[in-house]
Image 1 (spheres, rainbow, N blue to C red):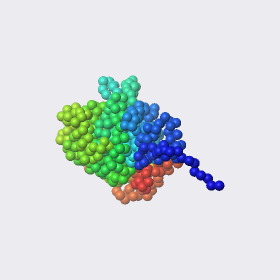
Image 2 (image 1 turned 180 degrees about the vertical axis):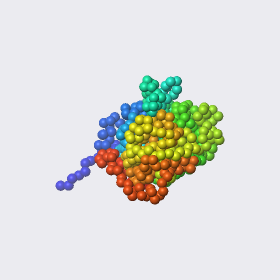
Image 3 (image 1 turned 90 degrees about the vertical axis):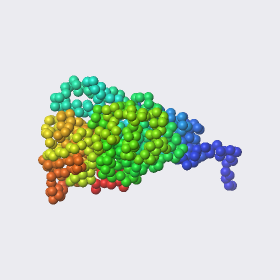
Image 4 (image 1 turned 60 degrees about the vertical axis):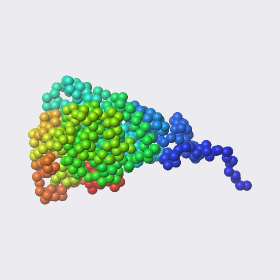
Amino acid sequence: MSRQAPPESEGDEERFAGSKDEDLPSSEVTEGPDRAPHRAMFRAMGFDDEDLSSPMVGIANPAADITPCNVHLDDVADAAIDGVETAEGMPIEFGTITISDAISMGTEGMKASLISREVIADSVELVAFGERMDALVTVAGCDKNLPGMMIAAIRTDLPSVFLYGGSILPGEHDGRDVTVQNVFEGVGSYATGDMSADELDDLERHACPGAGSCGGMFTANTMASISEAIGLAPLGSAGAPAEHEERYEIAERAGELALECVEADRRPSDILTKESFENAIAIQVAMGGSTNAVLHLLAMASEAGIDLDIEEFDEISRRIPKIANLQPGGTRVMEDLWRQGGVPVVMRRLLEGGYVHGDAMTVTGRTIAEEIEHLEATGQIPPDEEVGGDFIYPVDDPYTEEGAIKILTGNLAPDGAVLKVTGDDKFHHSGPARIFESEEEAMAYVQEGHIESGDVICIRNEGPRGGPGMREMLGVTAAVVGQGHEDDVALLTDGRFSGATRGPMIGHVAPEAAAGGPIAVLEDGDEVTIDIPDRTMDVELSDDELDRRRENWEPKPPNYTTGVLAKYGEAFGSAADGAVTNPGAKRDD
C-alpha cells in the first residue's frame, strides 16, 4: 500500500514564505517551513515575526571590565541596537575578547596584544559567517579592537559600520592635563629621584578619570581617526569622548546607517581602494599618529587585496605636512581636537591643500569631499577660520614640513623599520649598541641607571614570531624619557612601541631577529648610526663581517611550544607586511 503525502491546507506555503529578500544571508536561517527549528531558537530569545522578516545586523561588542577603554561598551552597543531597531532591522549582539595594552604593558602578557587583533577578526568573521548575518556594526575600544574589527568587516565584506567607543577625558595633576603616558614617564622620573613617591602616587590616582581609550593621539585614537579617513566610519564619529552624550548619538546613528548600507548594498569592497588607504596614511602622518597604524594598515590592505608597501608610508609622509600637534609629541588630547571640530577639520585642510583624494567613497554613500560639504552645511563642523587654537595648523604654515612617520632602511633593517618623530626631525645619532634579548633585560638596565648619553639600546627577539606577538614597550621608552634621555639615547627593536611613546624610538625592525635579520647578529659595542633625514639605520660593519656573523648564528628556540602563543607565533608574517596571519601572507622565511 503506497503512502500519500499529508494534505496541505490552503495558504500553508504562504504562512512560511516570509517577506525577507532572499538575497540576504539571513534568509537561509529564517525563511521557509524547513527553518521552523531555527525560528524557534530565535523566538526563545524574544524575536518576533517582524524581527525575523528584517535584515539581521550583528553588533560585535568587546565590552569588558578589563580596561577603561571597553568598560562602557555595553552602553555604546545598546545605543547602536536602538538605531538598528529604529531603522527596522533585527539587531543580534555578540561578544569577543579584548586585551588591555596599558595593563599588560611591561609584562609577559603584552605578547597577547597583537594576537588579540587576529582573534578579534577571526571571531567576528566566524560569528558573522556561521550565523548568516546580513550586516555588521563593529564596536571597538582598546587599541587592537579597532584594526581587528575593521579586518573582520573587510573579510566578511558585509555592509558594515565601524563604531569607536570614544576616548577618556584627561586627568588633572598639579594644575595640568595628564594621561597615562605621564604616569609611565613618571616611573622613570621616580627611578632617578626627580619625582617623589607622593607625587607619583597622586599622578597615578588622577591620570585616568573614567571610561574611554587613552586620550592622546595614541594607537586607539589614531585608528579611530583612520576609520574616518579610510571611509569605514562616518566623518566626525571618532572625536566625542566616551562618556559624552554625543558618543551615544553617534552609536545610534551607526545602527541606522548599517540598514542604509544593506538597502544600498554598500560593502567595504565598495569603499576600500588604494586611494582610501592613501587617505588613511595622510591623516596618520598629518596628525602624528601611532607607528602601530603602519602595521595595521598593511594588514588591512593585505586582507582587502590592495597592494600597499611599507615604503609608501615614507613617500606620503615626505610630501604631507604635520598640521596637528597632540600627545605624545604635544600636550593636547582627542577631546581638544573634538572641540575644534574633530578629524573632519584636519581632513578639510588636507583636502584643500590637495593632499587627500576627495572622491574616495565613505560608508555614508558620499565621498570625502561631499561628506565635508555636508558637515559644513549642517553646522556639524565650524568654518575653517574658526579652527586652530595652538595645535591645529594651516597646511601652508604647518607644525612641521613633513609628516610624523618615517621608514628607515639600511644594513640593520633591509626590509624597513618605523619611527614616529615627536621631536627633532633632523635627528642624527651615532653610538654604541647595548644589546638585550628581551624587554625585561632592557628595563632592568634602564631602571638601574646604567644608560649613558649616546647609547643605542637594542631589544631583539620581540618580533611577531620571536616574541611572539611584538610586545609594545612603553615602559622602557617612557623610563628612558623620564630619566631625561629623550634626545640623546636611541632605542631600536623588532618589537613595537605604544602610540604614547616619544623620542627616537625605532620599532618594527625587519627582518626580525627570529628570522635571522641583521639585528640578530648585532653585538654589544657595535657602532650604530641613525639618520632621520636620510632615512637610514646602519651598523658600522662590512657585508663580509655581517655574513660571517650570520654563519655562526643559531636561532633561539621558541618561547612557547603549545597554546595560542605558539599557534599564532608560527602563523605571523613579517612586520614589514603587517604581521598578518592569513594564508598567503608574506613571511620572513
